[in-house]
Amino acid sequence: MTGMDSTAPAGFDRNAVTRFAPSPTGELHLGNARTALFNYLLARRAGGRFLLRIEDTDAQRSQESHLAAVLADLRWLGLDWDAGPDREDDRGPYRQSQRGALYGRLFEALERQNAVYPCFCSPLELEAARRAQLGSGKPPRYAGTCRELSEEQRRGKRTQGLPATMRFRVPAGRRIEFVDLVHGPQSFLSDDIGDFVIRRADGTAAFFFSNAVDDASMGVTQVLRGEDHLANTPRQLLILEALGLRLPSYGHVSLILGPDGAPLSKRHGATSVREYRESGYRREALCNHLFRLGHSSGEHGLLDLESMARAFDPTHLGRAAAHFDAQQLRVWQKEAVHHLPADEARRWLAPELPAGLGEAAASAFVAAILPNVVLPEDARPWAQIVFGPPPAVAAEGEETIRNAGERYFAAATHAAAQSGNDLPAIASAVRAATGKKGAELYMPLRLALTGRSHGPELAPLLKAMPAGAAHARLARFA
Image (cartoon, rainbow, N blue to C red; front, side, top):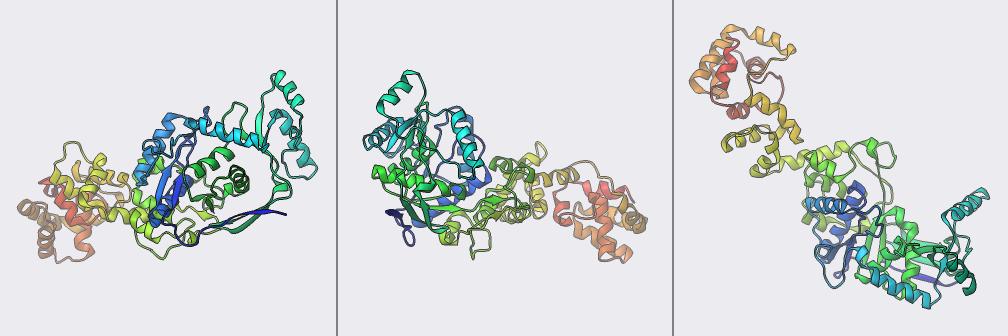
């Protein structure tokens, strides 16, 4: 029994070429974003090339708006490509809808070898055969109905106007073997596969075909993709072998599951890159979380893409499913926010700041609240507290205000009138007048100034307030 072998190269290939090949039929899902990230890191780690190919042969579902959104999301993530639909080279075009001439030549080459044949079975007939196989306990695969039709029979069906797909003639008695970059040695029997469609009835190339031959013709050497494609690999290896094309090394990464172990879906919350981007998540946070989903690393801190590339190792890709953890993503988000340069933090929070706010006031406010912010929306109530009218004190804080007493607030108000929004000066005056310290000294001030018992550090917050704000807020209780 003959076999075929596609062995993964040891270590990192300095001429490595990887790719990400999305279909423009919807938003960029977190699972696809991780696939793009892993392929990008593998290429950059090896000093190779990262390609972007758009698999848009499904004309009914592919939309330009989806393509534009995918490109925008990839750019936001920082995953720049060396060649793609907007950066063509001699391996292109990088949109499959523009590669029909190449596919046509390769279909003809397979026809000359008698490696393919037309199939006139209707979807209804195929579904009936599938149900019959399942009912008898057999695995569903094409029964070979049209495999041995004579040329006269084929002409007759064409005369009747019956549409035909093109099926690949899977050789009998073969063992297809390859080494998966993640799952190790793999072995499939050709007799378990069944002849499969490589050209649709409308003449367009099917996924098995176009995906495989494009990888070969574009010089792709290593493919990381979801493990749901693992069973596709023997079919694609057979196609490439028949055409005498180079076989890439395949690695099939684990799927991303929700916390409950079910495939990640809308019921677990946001699932697209757009949703996280529009919510204010930093790309550094999302990339760091995805980097560690199904990939183990000794690097525990926040990494930029260059550092991730140095730390990325396909031998550290796990076979077990990865669980997306929204809380862990928030941890990375908090870490990313705390590393923001001042000017970038201002730009990030700009939509939450009052219109017309001066640069100095904006900088003071952002510096004050940034340690307590995870998402931009967290800044919204504090912008109202700092720049709006004196806030009401929460009911649970009213007793603290009463217990502080008039003498306390008289001293605080007088100090604010003299020193402005200077917390040390105000606290010093109150301490001298009342002898209070610790929480008894600072909690009534926090409540009177912000209306809340917890929040950002009070001194910088007070500095961000408009001139006279501290005096006006304290005077309410004097």
